[in-house]
Length: 133
Image (tube, rainbow, N blue to C red; front, side):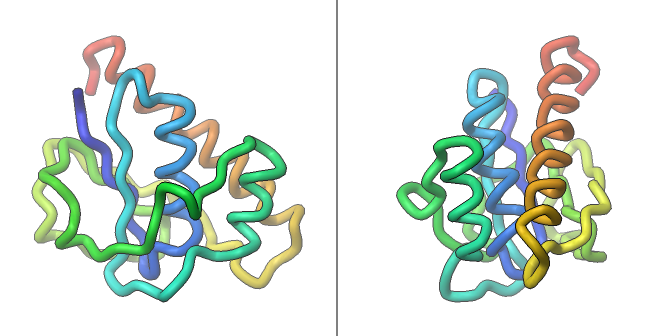
């Protein structure tokens, strides 16, 4: 099974959402991990609240903020759109999703970000299943 790492700066919002949705929507196809170049003490509480409300996922139960060095070897590295340079994370495939950080924004902005991540999770799942990734 392929291992996908979602990387952003603080590993508190977008990458955590991607890890949770990856496990929820594509756990049968790839393993999802998240990390940051730097970390904060807690996962973004707006993300936690809205993920519970929208998807029934409690990110605080199974996830925590971690740095890139804590990840297993990855097949795919996805940066979330914050100019993260993780060149020391070797992977067969890399891509950047170009997503703005919704931290400090309205619930509507968070929901749009979560929905964009949900759509993007399906893309690598389909490419892996078809043998294109």
